[in-house]
Length: 156
Image 1: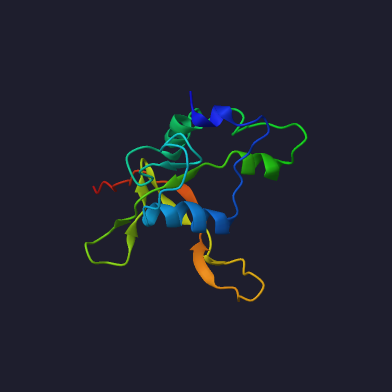
Image 2: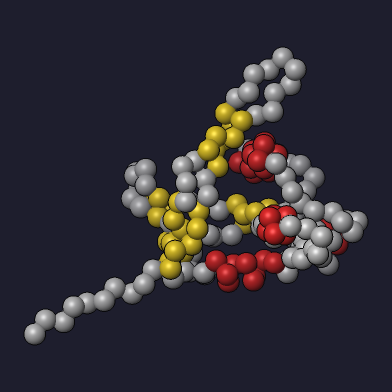
């Protein structure tokens, strides 16, 4: 039984970009101990998103790890956009460099690769009364592109 099954019906994990960066990611990289559910039970999972599994296989392996109270894949009254937002899963993963000291990343996964859809967009802090907004990270959207086996021309 997951710790999220103790949450009341109607609970949804819909963090802001700032909350994801400042609470979950910051605490992860600084090893700050915050009361949160154990790995792969809670709202942000650990997974190799650049491994041998295809995206739909990753989805299938994680979608049942969380309580129906936390995650829902249908709501009659919600718009398509709201339904999609309720289906989001969040992951910690490590990037893989193409070369040891290079700045380019290998985004291969399963039978394809992750392809960037847009330029990264800045994520700004939510300032208090006397603070200015500061850039705290960036957001970039990726889509899965299946790699077709290359066809070799046969010469005669």
